[in-house]
Length: 385
Image 1 (cartoon, rainbow, N blue to C red):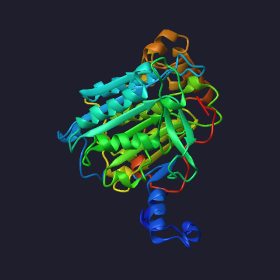
Image 2: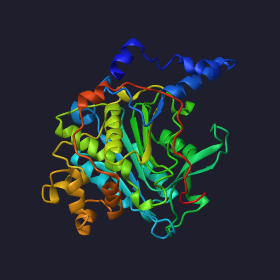
Image 3: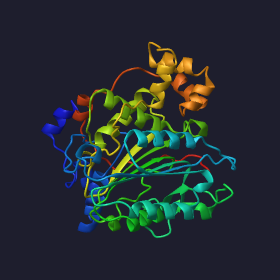
Image 4: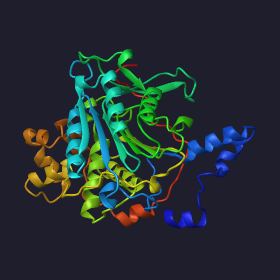
C-alpha cells in the first residue's frame, strides 16, 4: 500500500530522489536547492501528505484569528467566450456564510477590473492579522502570456483574465502571476496564512510560490483547470469547485471537524475522479515554508452544510443513487439554476457516469505524498491566445 511504501522508503522534501540525480549533475548548489523546492512543493492529480501536522488550528476550531475571503467570478457575457462562473462565486459565498466568515468581499463581472481587484486585495489584505487566513478565490478565464522577467522555465506567465468597465478582455486587463503575487505580498503581513483557489485554465502556478519574495510566508495554492478534451465547452466550468464543495460536505458528514489542506485536496481529487472522471488537472503548490499537511483547512462549516450537488439529490425526490438524482434534477432547469448548477454541467455529469459513495477519511489520511516535477494545466483554447 501507499502507507507501507512510505514507511519503507520515506520521501524527504529536501533530498533528491534517484530519478533526479542525473539532471542534478553539474548544477550549482543554489540551482539544486531551487529545483528540489519546486519538486517537493508541487503536485498534480496525486494525493499528498494529509495528516494534521499543523501547529496553528483553523480559526473555527481554535477560536484564534479570523478568515477573510475575496471571491472573484466572471461570466464574460459581453465577449464571444461566455462562462457561468458567477454560479461558482455564489456557491463559495454560501460556503463562506456556513463557515461564519464575516469579512467576505465578492466581485462579479464588470466589478472585476484589474484596478478594482488590486484595490480589493490591498483592502482585505490590510485587514488580516497574524493568526488570520486570507482566502482568495477566482473563477473565470485564464491564459498564458510571454514572460517579461525571465522567471518562468517555459517562457510563459500565467494570467487571470479580468475585464474593463465594458466587460471586454484585452491585454491591458490581464493580471499576470507576477503582478498577482506582488499585490498579495504587498498587502499582507508575513504571519498571515494564505490560501489561493483558482478554477480556471493556465493556473497551475498562478501565484509563483517559488519566488523568493514570498519569504517565510505560509501560502498554498490549489487550482483546477480543464484539459484539452473538455475545454471546448466552456459551460462545463466549475468542476474543481463542485469537487471541492462535495469534499467539504462529505468530510462534515463523516464527523471530521478539523483537517489539513492536504486532506481536503485529496478529497477533491477523489470526487474529481469518481464523479467527473478526471476531466481536469488539479494542482497544489506550496511555499517552501509549508506543506499540505502543515496548514489547517480554514473553511470549516459551523452549521450543517450541503454542497449544491447534494442539495440537488435531496430535492430530486430522494433518488436511490446520485446518478438517479442528477437525472431527475436535469428535468428541472429552475432547480439546477437555484442550486448553482448549470444544465451543461449536469449533462456532463450524467454522461460521464456519476457514482455514489462517501469519502473515507482514514483512506485519505493514509495517502502518501508523491512529489514530481509535473506541469500545471495543459495547453488549450482559451479566452485569448
